[in-house]
Picture 1: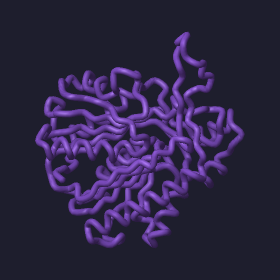
Picture 2: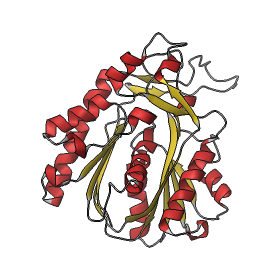
Picture 3: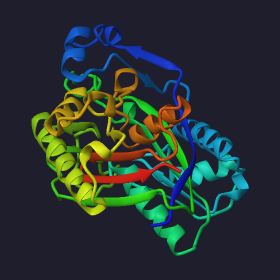
Length: 318
């Protein structure tokens, strides 16, 4: 594997929505949300497009890497839905950056960032690119049923970007899919085709929370075992565990099962909620800029999402 992350960045909407703001139109409370999720606030797009957020994150990542947009050979955006059904968010971002290069989206739900890293390292290995921009960007507010208190309190909007270049930081990467679409999904309609069955259900997210919780914990334990065995290390040899920021209970439970210090499991979901595939790169950027990820640190990233997809990787920071 030949990949290192040379620059990171994030883009966030200006509008902060507190738990108490949700109390105005939902049968919920700040206390209820905090106790069950750990979330205190989230960012929601009001004036910003998803391209705006992806662009902001990308510019910051390029600046951190000491690169210009013209240095990008490939753009991969992980998203469950950009500003358009077509063209892709990656193409929209490429236009905003003013670059001409291959650009495409992938949808692996909340695991998308790990999948995108897998593709990036393949492009670098095959020498089809020397610089790949990977962006996780999600506008979850557009897929949320804001009358459903069980899901609407969970999500937020944002983007995280990283510039990937040849290196030896990526030590392990694994992706998987269980092939179960019934416990976490969002349907599409049939447009106005006179030949299609009318689909009255709107494209909102539906989730069976307990099943998602079980899958998340089982996937994490499986991936940790695979990674530590492959690298011949112990769980405590990992400096930081960057887990998908879905629910604090899941993260706390995962750490307890491994018997590790909670400090190894940084979180930012308290401020941002669940931003799907943007969660890990956004958290990574915060930690890098705060000096909490240093050269030589072993970083374990793990995510799970609709599909059911899961993925993990280990980076030894360069």
